[in-house]
Image 1: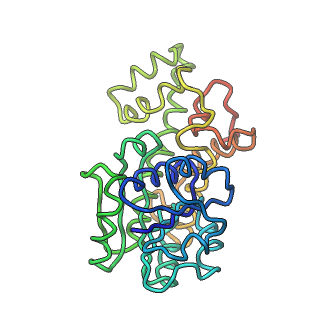
Image 2: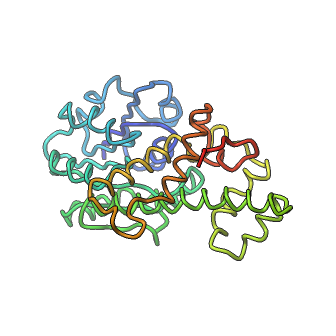
Image 3: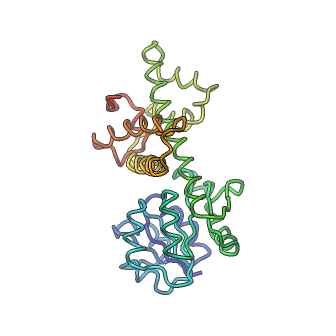
Length: 291
């Protein structure tokens, strides 16, 4: 197919590269230099979103957040009638409803995972639309991105968006838990390595394994897999979703653990580490949150 791919940041580039062997890609990014990897791999580069979608059989967007989607797609009336629109952007359930109302061919396709799984084609991927035929078509298109066991069709973009936010809530809260575990271990006289080892039989084993290399200094957070800016943006979508639903009377309804994680992320962002991997909250010298 002729596919227009809008948004070639870190994740968007990896997703688009998986499509090049089987499809003709035309790509666009607000910062044109970020299309260079795909251009070298054989994609055409468009000067504008309108040029990119002009002859497309299918449009894919991988933008920073819902406001970028509104500006680039919705306000511009960008999607031609009848052309499927796959949106991998992380949005709230309410945003997904809005986009589906505006564009009948909208399919919410958020991906779960970081750049490593993206390069390997082993992400989790939700495909959300009430149109069963369109859902099957999109599941086939995006299969190169996904671990087959984690490629999931659901009957709305809202459900797909919810699945993505739940995954990132678990990631943010787990990272905050690891931050606090490292602090507790240090206060008790344990080294960071000893603390990581002791967490191996706990509920924090997954995040300790994922982020241990950053804690040990084996990896730098510069140019990281999932930036502090990005996960903080997603955390605000989660908090906004709960606030809009007036769920604050339920246990955990105000998302206090997530707010703690967001405070840690915001402290690092204010210190100039927003474009670093969100593991920056775990490093010695990470900014205090005042919590």
